[in-house]
Amino acid sequence: MKSWATGQVEHSMNFAQDSSLAFYLSFGLNFQIEHHLFPSISHDHYAALAPKFEAVCKKHGVTYWSEPSLTRSVGILYDALADLKSMTPVNF
Image (cartoon, rainbow, N blue to C red; front, side, top):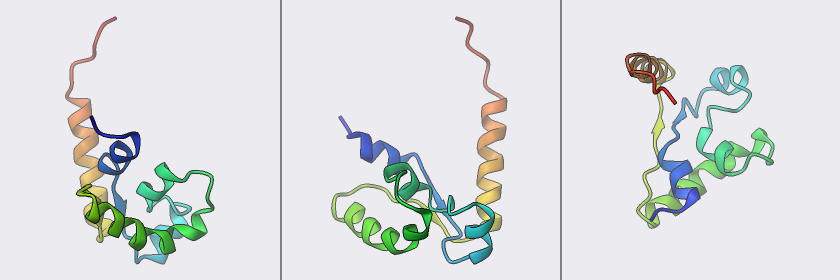
């Protein structure tokens, strides 16, 4: 069984980490992985944490997904939302 933290990392994606524009437009949420793991830490610290945390993930075999392109990231989000839209709703 995977840990809570592993689930948070493997089901999140950082995007455009080198883009000041993406950082300011998203209020630092382009560092989704660090945000999900450390929500009470100011987003101003995520850029410094990211490479260290990525190294820890690599050491422990945890997939750390970071998409460098803002344009590609938007495309990935769009595709994911389109997939969700095509799913049949569950009736409870």
